Length: 258
Image (cartoon, rainbow, N blue to C red; front, top):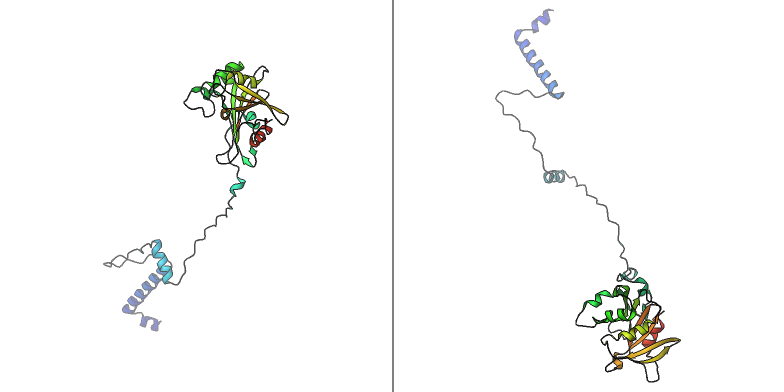
């Protein structure tokens, strides 16, 4: 007891108290307690937040390599050969009429169209397919209205060397009369008066009429006429020979008709 009392002088007690207080403060810091504020000392600034570029520089300075961004590789697209893609064709007004026309002759593809007759009756200054008064004359001769008629075309491309084409005209509801006779009674593309001059020909077993028209009866403006049911075929091409021989391309086209 005497020794203990010897060391417990007021000064040592004060030092022990200060040491104990320091130890307690250190324990508090270790345990995550707030650091006591020293009066008069400047407050510590919070740690600034680094932007992504600064973070990347910090990683590089510490020897860390950036993690590469891996993006999925899109699947390879194999181009489809253009030869396997069917070319779009025109919408057919009269599919059954268009189906009667040949698609290819001598390896040459023909352009196939079918349209109503009515637009050709609207007038115009050129007889490219039909003249303006031609639909009306055909309707009168057939006893059908223009709305009962449709037109089909099979024509070769320019420069192909194929020397024939065909206009097909359907007379829906016709009463069984010859549509070749309807054509001969109605007149040609541009002539509505005067009787035609005709020659009866055959292409194989098929009867064909070669017609030239008033007033000049020019063979270069003549036409081959044949039919199937209610469909009239007007075939354009070189004229027949004196012996009735039909030129090769014309005969080939006529033979391809139903």
